Length: 243
Image 1: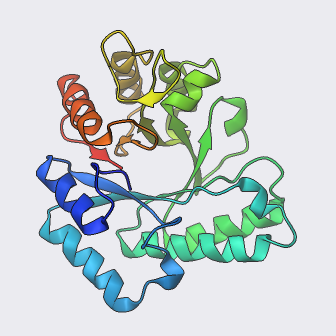
Image 2 (image 1 turned 90 degrees about the horizontal axis):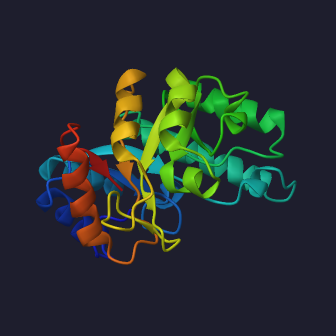
């Protein structure tokens, strides 16, 4: 989770609450939140901390190479990890899990993960950069639109959101700056994302999810998150979730 310039999870959550964020996106890869390593007391403590800070969990991130789900040596462990993350997401309010299920992932693996999502009640969000990449997705699998990735692929996030329609399950508010770096939205002289058109597209399709400001790889995540929160709110969306 990238919530401020804090390495410690508790400090990051406290920062997010103090900054006025309504919800946070949690990562279960390379963190203290690995579901298979968290005991009952640790899970209860996390839920209590979120409640005390008046924060919701907007979703869970589980980014790892999609090839792990196609590798005969790694697939069993990878599937078990995704299922554990789905169960963790269900405990946090049946929030969606963002995970790469793409490319050469066997259909039987996709079916197994989809069945686990159905059982737990937590949707699977699959990162896509084009409408073609979203073909074949069906509930409980939905598209996740990372604005910077779409821009890098010469796409237009607002147009892709419209084309995805009800198949859009997640939006990551992050710009691809003219410097080539990922960063906050609407940066003066640097922004490439038409955030106003994106908001209009989300309104048009009735998007009900929580847009997530993805501060991974930002040079100054704390100030960038505050700026993104203020700028998105100014477009009429109000308090949003950032992770």
